[in-house]
Every structure is written in structure tokens, then in C-alpha cells.
Length: 629
Ligand SMILES: Cc1cc2nc3c(=O)[nH]c(=O)nc-3n(C[C@H](O)[C@H](O)[C@H](O)COP(=O)(O)OP(=O)(O)OC[C@H]3O[C@@H](n4cnc5c(N)ncnc54)[C@H](O)[C@@H]3O)c2cc1C
Image (cartoon, rainbow, N blue to C red; front, top):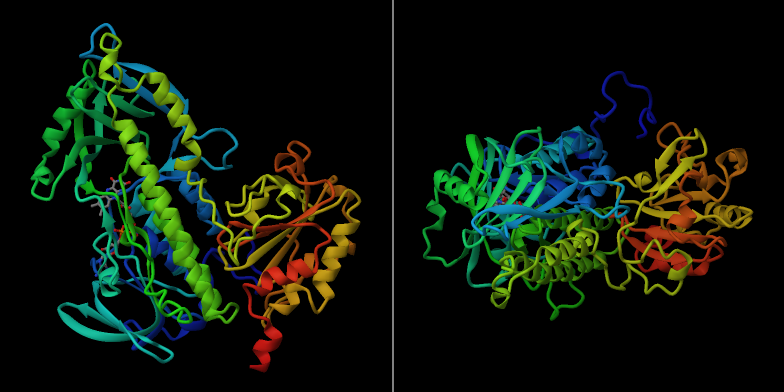
């Protein structure tokens, strides 16, 4: 974490002085905003935290509830989400508070007496090496709070406007083409926006306003969900458990943060609209849970939160108001999260995928509003995230059906079902997906085809940048390279050196000086050299062998109001775990380009020059012509 770059300030360095719109923001809603976010769920709070990194963009976030969410809803935080939280500087806080899911244990009917359950096996929750971060459990309300605090402390000082309900919108022309109707205490009023993002959940009014529909299953699957404090003789109370009884139902048990609380998901089966499943009481849920757990039992002392959560697998065909009939018109209204897709809680993806939608959109909105990219960039949001959501629905359909299958009865194999071994194998096989790491964006302007993929096979193009340890040359600090990535809307270029380091220095010199360098061509005038493209060098040898006094400017740039050098862009291998080996990087070196949302965009040879400029020319505005326009 870097601070004091604009001068020393006593006190908490996380509190950044107000800038940009924060200096003129009014308590009441203004007539015009650049971006209006509707909803403070996981999607809305990620988008708010992301846009808060840009104080020159006037963002407001409205929420119809009177205040922040306090309890309940989702709680599973996939490894990928923790990686994203690291980019916001929030991972430490999250990991400190969270329950870490280390193992999943399986319980099924005993062969000796099928009315009793026995432990049938276990798997590691997240296969080793998938991510430097674990899969954790934290209340959704806390996740949202972390993000909102981040936005509030930022230079934008962005805080939600509570008690404000989105009513409707229409889109016309002009600089602020979206006319939005909002309501406070029954009074309607109008706001105009450049962009509106509906993060307003499964019953999204923004989705309705742009004529999109959730399509899919007619029926819902119902779960009784309870966060309980209880005493029990069940021995695996502090691990995640999948419990299948013989004919009495199934249970998912997930320990919660704090060392005592556990969430029970009691499967209430498929339901239709006319059902009264929602009236299932906590006592009834506890009684079903005790039946399933026999011969063990729980004695519930306190229920922190409970709900009957009904959800079907549904998806919209587009996540924006764009239309194939108007190819030149870029979207102005977007939807994210549950507004676009709903699915079961079994794979623990609801909150995670919603956050990733918003992370995909946030940097694109910022790049367009700041003039770094053309508005066509915004077309890629729906294209990329709709197909991720379709994959998720397909996965959820398979996964829900699989884990709902009864355990095979060895005395009646003809009745079918799943063996304990099959359950274990499938859990392990799906680990990558449930960790949130299976997303692979298809080739597009943002994500190359992969002609040079073999130069760095461990950084698969289209997937998230898989961090590995390195040593920072300036101070010998051991760090994860991926943690150099901040949620600041910048592109990253990781230049992995050749054996002598000469090719790497040549590249850095070209990036520093050439008029064709993407760092020069696409950085707006008057901005720091690393404003748009943040270049990092990773040398092959020991960090003591790197002469930091002789690196080209791009690796030790002067930036910020005091034009101080930035010492945190030069790295060497960590002898304990050589990143070149860990990520199969060619010893001749390679360039790895990473998008602002941490996905690998391209891999190029270290000697690439025109290919590098051309790649960015497809995404970023050439600032020489931008000045002339
Ligand atoms: C009651 C409930 C229980 C759930 N339980 C579980 C669970 O047990 N496990 C699990 O994995 N997932 C659960 N989920 C799903 C999970 O919470 C969602 O997948 C996730 O929250 C989606 O995030 P989101 O930001 O898209 O939407 P949401 O979290 O739904 O947030 C939408 C926000 O928009 C606000 N809003 C809605 N309409 C308007 C409007 N017109 N104007 C202004 N603001 C508006 C809402 O008040 C809300 O704050 C549950 C969801 C709900 C609603």
C-alpha cells in the first residue's frame, strides 16, 4: 500500500482527502449525475467502490431501504472475490473476520442402519495452488459494509442515498440522455444521468424499464436458511458438511465467522408460485434438521437470521439497453447481479458473480467517462458477462441435480443414487468453478486470440491473472505479484525478463521514450507516465543483482503531485518459488498484459513492439488525435 505520495498527513492513511466532485457534492440528489447506481447489494457496492476511485466522475448510489443491510442473504466468498478485494485493499480485513472453508465433509446413511448418518468422506475445499487466497464465509452485509467504507474513505467520499427508490427511466439524446424518476417519501422527482446501472436485485425495476426479462425455470427451489448458535453432539460442527439422509431430506451446513455460528440450508425441494413454503417456521426447520442429523442433534440457543429463500434458474438475454438493430449506439443503461441472473445457493455463486459483473463494468464506465476509451468499450460488458452467466446457469443446473441425488443404498443398488466416492470426486472436480476461477473471456478486442500463449502458459489469456510470489527489488520484500494490481482502472503490463535482462531493459526503454509506446500514446496529456498503463518488470535472477539505478524511466517513474519516484514496479524471482517455473514463463521472457479487472488480455514476446501498440489501439483512445479533436 502506498500513501503520503501527495505529502505527509498525520492519522489514518486510508482516509484520502476529498477531491473532484466530493468538494461540491450536495446532501440532496442533484439534477444531473454521470453515473447513477441503483441498489446497494453486492453488485452496487462493488461498482460504487470502483467508481469512487475516480473523483472526477460524479457517481451517486441510491437505495430504497432506509439504511444498510444488517444481516442475512449470501455468505460464501469465493477465492476470486477475495482476490478482487485485495485489489481494493480489503482482503486483510475480510480474511481476519471470515470463517475459512478448509474442508468439505460428507455424511450419508450408515450401511448398518440407514436411519442413522455416518461420515462417508471429505475433500479439501479448494485444491492447493488454485489461488493464494482461501474460500471464506462472511455475511453479505459485512461485505457490503467493507466496500461502502472504502468508497466513503476514498477521494470521492461516495456514500449511498438511502430511502431513495428508483421508479422508472427513459432514454433520449444529449449529454445526459437518461431521464430517471426517483421517489423519496412518496414524492417523485427527476434526475438526468449519462449512465444508469441497475444493481437492484432479482425483481429489478431497472431491468423492467429497459424491457428485459429473466427467462428460465417456471418453478423455484426452496431452502430454509438459518444462522444458528447451538450446542450439539455432531462432531463436524466447524467444517462445511453435505448431509444426505435416507428419505428425510438433505442439509448443507456451513460454519460462520466468529467460531460458533453455523448456517444450515435445509432443502425444501421444488415449489410453485402457489406454495406456502415461505411460512415454514424456524421450529419446523430445526425439527427437519434434527431428523436429517439423527443420531446426532442440535439444540438451537439463538437464531441470528432465518429466511425461506426461493430461487429459480433464470437469465436475461442482454445486460444492457443496447440493440442489435442499432449497431452504432452504445448502451446507456446496464443491469448487474441478480437483476440479470438467478440460480441456487448450492454452488455459493450469487454474491460472487454479482460482484464480478460490477467489477467488469466499473473500469469500462470510468475509461469511457474519462475519455481513455471510446463508448464502444461498453458493448463488451453484456457480451462478456451474459455468457459467464449462461455458463453459471448450466453449471448450477448440473450441480443442483447432482448434489440432490440420494446416496446409493448398497442393499438396493437398482434404486440408483450417488456413492460417497462419486460425491467426493465431483466436489474435487468442480473446485475450480466454485472458487470462481473458471471464467474465461472469449477472444475480443479486450482479450487476444492467444498466438503467443505458449510463452506464459500459466497466465491463460481470458482467465484471471494467477498470482505467484516475487521479491521487490527496492526493499527485498516478498510479495504476491498479483497484489501490485489495484482497483484503479489501469491496465497492467508485466514484462518478464530474458536471462540477461537486456531484452527487458530494451523494452522498458522503448516504453519510456518511443512516441509509439502505448504508455505515451494512450496516456492523456498532463498525466503521469503510468496513469493509463502500469508497467512492472520481473527479472530472472536474485534481486540483489538488479541495478535499480539504471532502469528506464517507466520502471521508476516520477508521479503524483510531488513527482516522487515510484519504487514498487521492479521485481525479481523468489528463490523459494520461481515465478518463471510456477507459471511456465519462457526463459526468453514474455509480456503479459492484464486488464483493469485482473483478467489476462494478451501474452506477447518480449521483443514485441508494433503488436503491443496495436493491441492497445483497439481499446484505448490515441491521445494525439484526442487533443486534435
Ligand atoms: C432474501 C434473500 C435471501 C437470500 N439468501 C441467500 C442465501 O441464503 N445464500 C445465497 O447464496 N444467496 C442468497 N441470496 C442471494 C444473494 O443475496 C444474491 O445473489 C446477491 O445478493 C445478489 O446481489 P445483487 O447486488 O445483484 O442484488 P441484491 O443483493 O438483491 O441487492 C439489490 C439491492 O437493490 C435495492 N433495490 C431494489 N429495488 C430498488 C429500487 N427500485 N430502488 C432502489 N433500490 C432498490 C435492494 O433494496 C437491495 O439493497 C438471497 C437473496 C435474497 C434477496
